[in-house]
Image (tube, rainbow, N blue to C red; front, side, top):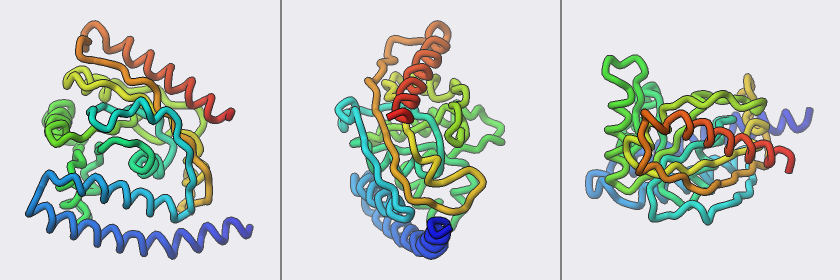
Length: 246
């Protein structure tokens, strides 16, 4: 009972304060972006934003396999998806400058939407008439030109911490289309911090494991896509189960 009350106090007091801080970051990004739209400072801001967000519950974490994530290489990062805290965890833990796909509704938030576009977050409109794959590839190419990796959750939605959901093929098509290597990542523990159906953020510990990258330069969607999806899903599932047991 006490833990629930403490989680409620931290959530409903600190989250509004964090949103105000987010607006401040957004305003700075918008103004600074007028001077230098490709500044590396945006990546540092995102990592700092993520670390502060992780302090709300608070969340501690341990990371393994970081040697596989080369800061000078661009990847399509694919990971299982458990909760709201997966993205800030990856920003904080991985030594790469990553961006993610975000639904168009978030871009309607004043200041925040403009700042998201400025830092290279890729807007996805699933109702758009154009091929979403084409639109996403354009965003990925622009992100790659700026030196950003792309973070994608191929389950398509949060699994909630039970069994992983089947992987969709979109992220793997993107990797093959662009020739960027895949960087598989397994996450465990964040589902206990932001529980399905609850608005409260609970104190917790998360684990993240980076697996060896998978080259895609010589692969084709016709011949290699299904095998790539199956093998990557199996590797992440195995790592996820190991993290849960550990």
